[in-house]
Structures are given as C-alpha cells and as structure tokens.
Length: 236
Image (cartoon, rainbow, N blue to C red; front, side, top):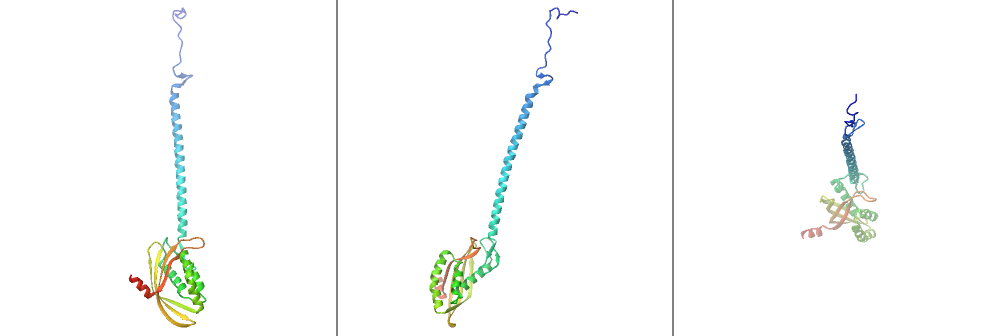
C-alpha cells in the first residue's frame, strides 16, 4: 500500500533518543554523582587531616607530660635523702626541710668539732668543720683559726665544751638559726685551769646536692663570744 510518505506528500518521521540518555545510560544524573563523590572525598580528606593534626598534638602533649614527670621524679629523688655529717646512714627529708632530729644531731656534731679539741686533734677537727662552711666563711675561719691552733699545740691546751642550753629556729625556707650556751673547761698539760661561759651562734642553710656532695647543712656564719658579751649585746 502506498502511503503519504511514499507519495512524497509527508516527510518520513525519524526517531530521536531521549535527551540525556546514551545507549541506555542516563547521563543526566552524572553531574550530581560527580559532585557527591567529590564532596565525599573532600570530607574524608579533611577528616584525615584533622585526625593527623589531633594525633600530633596528643603525641606532643604526652611527650611533654612524660618529660615533665620524669624531671619531677628526678628532682624528687635528689631531695628525698640527706646525709648527716659524721653519720653513714640516710635520713628522709622533704624539700627545703629536714627533721628536727637531724638538725639537732648536725648542730651537736658541729659544736663538738669546734669546742672539744686537743693539740693532736684540732687540725683535723677544724678542717672537717670548715668543709661544712660557705666559701666566704671557710676562708675567714681558716685564717682566724691559725693563731688558735698554734696556741693550742704550743701550750698543750685541751678544751672540753659542754652545752647547757640550745635553741634552734627555722624560717621554713631551709635556714636555721642556732644559739647555744656552753661551758668551756680548759686544761693545760692535764692541769685544770678553770671554765668560762660562752655563747655560740650559727646560721645554717640546707644546701641541695652538687658534684661530690649530698644534701647537707652549710654554716653561713659562726660567732663565738663570752656569755657576758652576748648579754651586753642583747640589751641593745
């Protein structure tokens, strides 16, 4: 049958594919999919950066805290023990303070080294005592002690120091003020010459460990005078 198309009256109809579809694939959703994937990848990448930054911060914080704890433990161990002069054992001590018993024993040792002397022992005792003095006091003490040592050895003098009263005051910052009232008995060639009352004052400081030394009480000042001179000075 000859139709209108065959007669040339009507143009032949050509079929067209649906817009945005190619070979059965709908290309209209492609931009949205690409945008979604790009946004998803960007979010994941941003999340990874955030996690890496936070991990680095936490690692640095952990390392800093461990270093601080280690340094504090090291300082705590340095301040945990103190060695009393003349004692071969350790005494527990808190930072900037020690027990009253330790201070009492240290003061007793210092006074014995200073006052209980003989011609044969005075050199060693004064040398041992000076090791606990500050550099300035040590130099002054060694200079002034020269005449005393020469006199003790040349005249064969022996002295016995008996402490009758002792006061130790602490300011809480590692400093101790010592005031001791004592009786000094003097002997020359085993003959008793009499006694004298005197007052000994010391200012001591708790010194932290350093090379070759542990915690110890350092004598910053030392005065020795008669009881009458001390009482006269106290009135002013």
